[in-house]
Image (tube, rainbow, N blue to C red; front, top):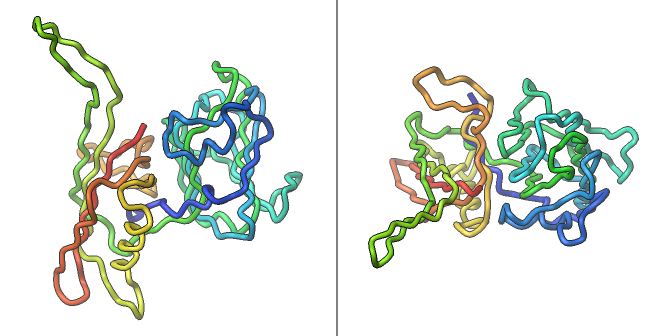
Length: 272
């Protein structure tokens, strides 16, 4: 099983974005907004694509899409890349519908693919979903970049907490009112043996760089089970939900163990 991965260095945010079609009030630039209710929407559902011009060739190891409406009837869903904005024969052409590829989740509110995808300037997400009941295609948050995977994985024992965000209030006469909201996950995990070695592997500094980059105010994708390994009947392993979108909670807790080794504790809360 691969180690937990953090997807935070998002090149999509600084790219020049274009779409083959878009509703004027719901443009493709909305996919940069961390709020999932702020979406891109195509004019029709037959076919649409969104292109990111990164300005120069960049190495990509992960793509992720959160808050989409792609249906189970989708006929084509691809990540493509090329040296120019020309798509007859793209150099990279990954089928995101393939459940047995390097890594993906599909039709669970979040789609992701991780691995060595290529080093290109132009990247395109192609979607053909003609039987989508909404009669359009919408996308929420998109990640395109590289992931950080510590050499030392999280501790085998970690916590997933299910929260109900519904609000309950009481009137003066004792009547109870419920404002029903979404249910989300909180994840708490620790990395017990993070090494700090400036002359070699320095995951300690990589954790600090990540936190200094995003803090608790910027969004992040995390993958707790990157290789889709079944952990067994008595262990949590929902293969459609092993990647989450949200934000870090609180600070980065660092505990010095001994020598060049530290324990780092991470808290994360899902956004949906």
